[in-house]
Length: 277
Image 1 (tube, rainbow, N blue to C red):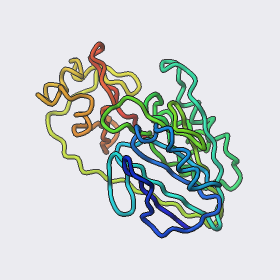
Image 2 (cartoon, helix red, strand yellow; image 1 turned 60 degrees about the vertical axis):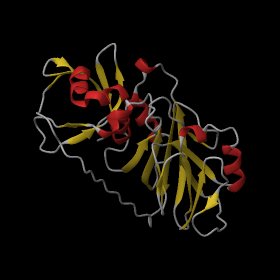
Image 3 (cartoon, one colour; image 1 turned 90 degrees about the vertical axis):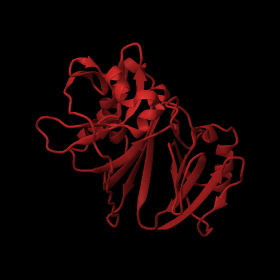
């Protein structure tokens, strides 16, 4: 396997942060700041760099390379597999927000990939409209839970306005991309880690729908949350990135961290990141 990494900062040219080498039809991940990805010239610039590459775009809330973690930049990781192969499929979300069936979208997405010797799937998904929890459940249902699937919902910094993704075209809204990897020699591993510390009393969720939280202990969830944030509440939803919720169910010992994606002042509710299964 050969890997090349590049980086682009605002108003600057692409620079190599690894040894420059020629790759044959590489899988190219392009992750970066949403405004930079919306630049009319960015797709052409990257296509000119990787003329026969398979370009997968996704907007972020921070960019990671082998040397640094940055903001307001674009990172490019191009991979040429020597013994493994890959297949890419994508889908555009056409339904209105209230009609989106994230479970079905996830199931159909996996079924579009060739199934023989499929070892692993990596997903880059719209992060504004899709319910990531149901998307994951749908993907797993198509494989009887015996296939490793990882990935992420695209971000938009602390703005929470628009997320972008695409395959071999200019990044756009409402797009989900799935990359299937194949080969007996392929080995994939992953890990997760968290460092949050809880504070405040435990409360019971008394009203919710999907990943929308309406009430805690019978009180409007958003009002209660703002009480804890104090003056920082004026910076919502961006301020919520630093103060997620710790959630656990009565029949589970472990807890999960749920970030607040957005708020609804009219309904006094909070839209949380979905639980991944």
